[in-house]
Image 1 (cartoon, rainbow, N blue to C red):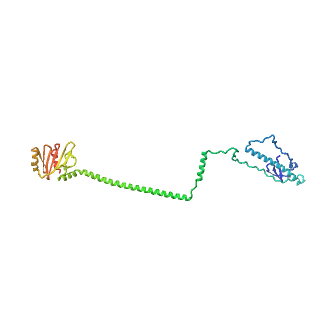
Image 2: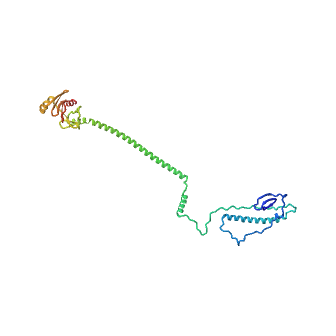
Image 3: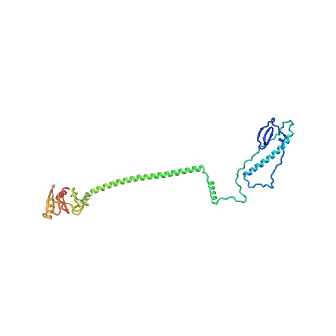
Length: 338
């Protein structure tokens, strides 16, 4: 039979204090031995022969404390039951079958919580573990940086933003000026290139025209030097071209023509003779009778066997001296091309 107690008609577990319900007094009868229990002498282990265990774990120590607390509780409960039984005897009525139960409140067993694990304490005589000097220096530096790190104020943030805006504006202004300078230089370079190209075209054109007109220019210069109204022939012997510039040798203006192998020179000088005077004063006296006469467009042309020819046209004396024998037809074409 489980340990039970009855208080004020309510049945309780003697160990846990659990409420087991009301007692039916009609069906149950109680004897005095069920209420009054004989006090038993507590039995304790003899400490002389039993040693206290050593090196117990925390859980084992907690279990031992709980066992002692329960044991003490049972001892107190037994003594309380004995005391309450003595006090209730005076209140028990002698009606048979009915017995009042002593009123007594029993507090439930309080279970202490399991102690939390705490950090182990340093043993006496043992120095705490110290960090490595390098590790400790790094930790000190980190703490110092955290201590020195202070958030800037709103005024400082505002001032910094204004400064950044000014710096950005200056940089943009510099970039704008630089870009404008680059554009100006590019425009100037383009204009200069255009002007230079225009001048180059003009110079090239002038040079080309000068090159084309150089024989006429040189002939006019030589004519001015000799005071002779010299000019270029419109016809040049086949395979020949003007070689060099016209020049004045002190007596006549000279034009030299060449075909790469042979050449001939055309001379012009002022003269008061006509064709008859040329024949009498120059041809017959110089060439004797070894010459030929050609008539072409009102001109009288005299040609000898030494590849020389002379004629008079508009108050000027023309003469051809050739390294090869030019045909009479070639000489007539040259003479009539002025």
